[in-house]
Image 1: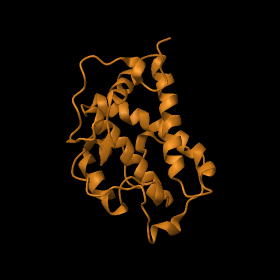
Image 2: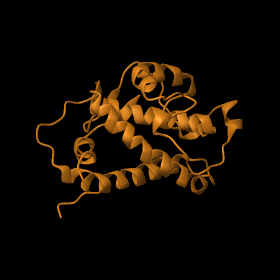
Image 3: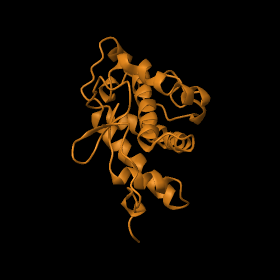
Length: 191
């Protein structure tokens, strides 16, 4: 999968594991993800999906922190959560929201199968042990017959690819900066 990575991602990584600040950052990141993926929803479907997406993304931040604790890099941990999101989009027939084509689902799963299996995550159950009841949202299963992926980039299923601030593509992600200012994380200011 191809992701972007900058200092805000590393600041968010640090902030998510801090008391109080972590809750603020998590809330802001959930809102950002709902906005970004909500904009990709087919016309007329955004509002009916928002509560579901909010609950889903909130739970993926537990996955993210556990992946970091398991030794995955920031980019890999974030990619794991994005893969979960793409599984969820696929299962609902929301193919227009997917970041990679449906025919790469298994390849992305296989790359992190050890982590996914340890936490009960499958393509059919993207949250695994992180799941539970989520608000309902209508599915569009008819889109699975001939999926359209206007926001998907294929060909990145063999590793995590990160585009840095200068537009360079780095396999595996960037090294974490030595001095990361947590106030650069979304939802945090210097006050």
